[in-house]
Length: 78
Length: 349
Image (cartoon, rainbow over all chains, first blue to last red; front, side):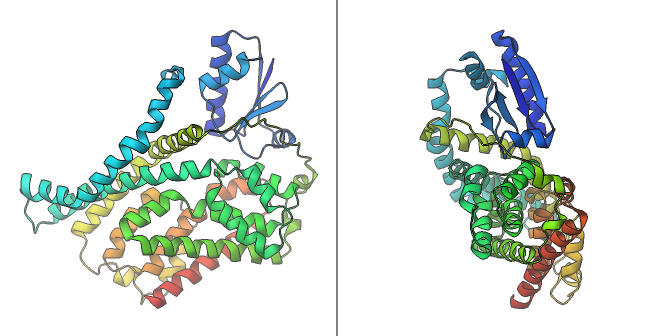
């Protein structure tokens, strides 16, 4: 599974990355985590608010910090 | 933090309804009896001297702090629910293809309602430009969004009364509409970094699940926790300074510096206010105390608007996508609007 966090280094974006790493660790899922900070790449996903969470190329959350439980549900459901 | 999210759903629902059905009625009740309560505590139980400066300051602090926090919690909660109906993506869709003036009015209005953080200014700006929204309309949004926010309105309402709060919101909205319109007329497209136009934004394809009303109440709850945890320290500090000014600074002390007669105080207030970066929470309680000591309302409003509406960090972020001349134009146009508002109110009141 490929997980991407879109954010330009804001505090919430970094928190999202931490939460995602924790969720991956706790669910034991094999995933590759990327933190995309380049604005051109971020815009390519079409989001207008950061942080955004992208799983396998699909935007699943934008402009908010999903909870650990939410992230587990999203990555576990695949 | 982790334990909050591991609870099952039934437990989560209980927390959700705790704010609207227990906390808010309780807060309203406290709010109604607050003044009598504080007077009873200060004069009755503590038995402090009615004429001392210290008593005045203590009473001011004890009364204003809970008042502001009650208002903040209730209003941020309601605004959080309202905002869950809006998003930058929806706002962009609404603004697409709107002509200049109508677009400015809509953008300023939506700027108040759309959840927005300065840290997202770049993707938002590019997203607007991408879908052909005129620059002037985008700027109306960028002026209104930070300037007219719920924290500022709560503090103005709580400390100055509803008239001043309404005045601030109306004039702020006007400044956002007119400055955006002026910038739109100036044909500033060439001052946007070229690469912005080259970006090909993808289609946003987030599958939005059904949003229930419980989710919206949760959004209100999140907004309260988020905002109160961020601003409480500034509010307490602001009210403490305000209380000291209230008790110790003599009457009419500010009249010569920030009073009506000192016409230069308006541009000076804006000049100091623009680079200064503070949230509404810290600045408004101090201003209230200064106003009491003879500062003019127009000058105070102008200072407040320039501190909250225009900030150095925001300009630094925007500099990545727009060239310096446009930053200068942006600041000058908005600052001029703020000064006009300042002069106008000093003239009327």
